[in-house]
Every structure is written in C-alpha cells, then in structure tokens.
Image 1 (cartoon, rainbow, N blue to C red):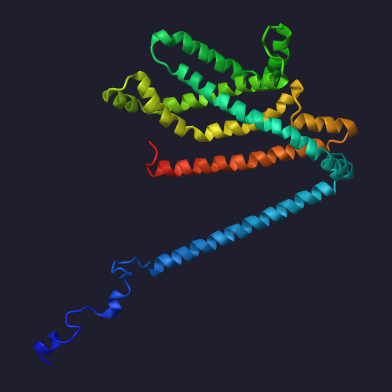
Image 2: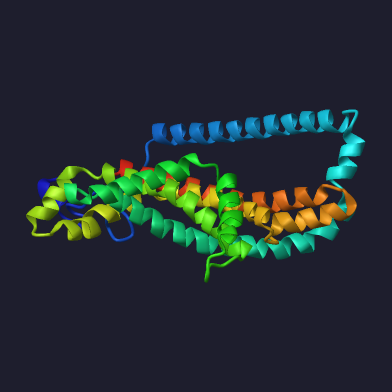
Length: 311
C-alpha cells in the first residue's frame, strides 16, 4: 500500500472513533470521566457513612431502651405516671394550653421586633466615637450592665408590681404589656452586646475605605459597618430569639393567661401536673425547629466565609 492509498478514503486523516466517544459530549465538548481510584474512594466514603449511620442508630436505640427500662422499673413509676403523664388530663389541658400559647406567640413577635430595634440603638450608642458622645456611651453601658446582671424574674416582678404601685396617670396596668416591657428591657441588653460585638468585628480598614470614598461618619456606619456587622451576628441573634420564645412563659407571673398559666389553672383543679408537661412539650416542639434553623444558618455562613463569600 502506497502513501497515496493511505491518504485516500472517506476516513482519511480522522481520529479513531473509539478514542473520541469516551471524552466527547453530545455537543462535541470534552466531558470528565472519573478515574477508577476516585470511584473507589467515593464508594469507600459511602460505605463508611452508611456504617456510621447504622452504628449511631443502634447505639441510640440501645440507650433509649436502657433508659426506658430504668424509668418504668423504678419503684415510684406508677405514681409518677399517674401524676405527670395522665392521658386524661393531657386531653383536658391541651385546648386551654393552645389558647394560651397564642399569647406567647404574639409576645414573641412584638417583643422580638422591639428587642432588635432597641438593642441595635444601644449598640450604636456604645460604639459612637468622640468625647461629645461620652454621656450617651456611659448611659448605654450602665443600661447593659444593669439589665444583664438583673435576673429576668426580678425584673418582671419589679415592672409588673412596681409600676402600678406608682399610680402614674396614663401608665398601663395591663400585665401583658408590663410583662412584655420587662422582657424587652432584659433581652435588649443582651442583644445590644451581640450587635456591639458585630460592629467592633468590622475591620477599621472598612471605615477608612468608606471615608476615602467621601462618606461621612453616619453614612459609613449605615452603608458599610452595620450591614457587615448584622450579617455576622445572625446566628447569636437567632439564639437569643429562641431564648425569648421560652421566657415569654414567665409573663404568667403577672397573671397573664398564657400557656403556662393555663396549665396552672387546669392543674390546680385536679392537683395533677400533666398540664405542665403538655405546656413544656409544646414549647419544646416550637423551640427545636428554631434551633435547627439557627444551626443551619450558622453552618451556611461558615461555609460561605470559608469560601470567601462573606467579608
């Protein structure tokens, strides 16, 4: 066969078909083909994950069975089951507790919004620069120190019973409003410290860059510092809101009929404490999704920060 013969024919100069079908996609583009070692490594990871899941499920099941047997075989279990886990009293208390829970949810929404606004204002006041703002900084510092050190129960008692005792004209004596005020006073101090930590975590170069672009101090705080600070403290803020959700039940001290007080009313009629368990389980059912959402937000922000997505 001569050179002319090798150059002739319909497939002259073309690459073998077997070499192109492995690397060419539908549009003629190269497509990635994982190596045998990578496939083996991925199979090993999947096998290890399945084995770890099975071991965790088995150990959890064994632990649960052991705890269950230890509780039900204790000497006082029959009396405890009758007093705290009565199905009859649970059915009786559930409607009343759910009616009271509506007050807790309203308090969470209103007080949560007020806490975020007031906490941000206090944090900004604490981070103002210049000697002219010293009285404002001192007042904000005294506020956070006092209400962070004061137990929430004592704050509730002081506000709920102390303000009506003053007999001031035009001041409400509604226990719901007074209890919500006490919650806002206490939690705004904690939230203010969270916001302040976020503001101080912004690098000074961000302020310098903003000022070099012609922004004044107020514009720098509003458009450069606060957006970064708020974004960084979202997880701890969500944790504070979860705690606020639970502590809304303390307004029952003032006589407001929330879920806890409704459970107390039912329990006082029969001297059975199952209504308290029902109210507690409802709060747990509300808190767990919020906690898992907080964990998801925290993990998402950590991934973005590791990839350089958050300044």
